[in-house]
Length: 184
Image 1 (tube, rainbow, N blue to C red):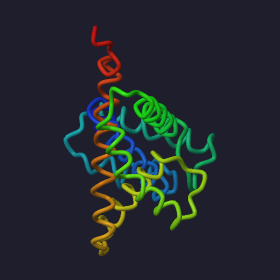
Image 2: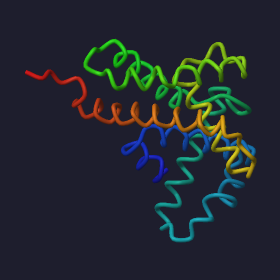
Image 3: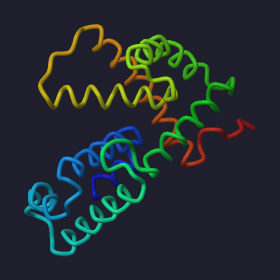
Image 4: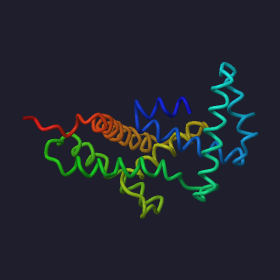
């Protein structure tokens, strides 16, 4: 909760990947707040009583949302889908705007990897941005599991990371109303 709000302000990509991980942590604990308290919250011994209550409340609200939205087993919360939607809309705006040739070039360097990932996973319904995040999250999970990653996959992830880092940077500028300013 504290980490999430900090990441949301600093780096939208890190925030989204973190929130997807939180969804999986909640699922791994059977959407059970007592298990989450024991396996997650209690591992922060320096929390004050107020912080502990706030964190429990945050997890409880996420559990409730997951149940109401039917994402107990798979999928993502609407609040996380909304981030993907915002990023996809910004992505389209940047591609259409001739003031951002570097962004467009970075995207076209990334596009072959996106196409390849979609072909391998049968991901027809995911957009370009969500496909990138799925790849980054998949890599995170592979690293956490200590699994080997081919050099080709490492190259793809490096390029996708560069592209998403640029999009995240532009997102932060856009939120501060500094991205699409007229140069008058």
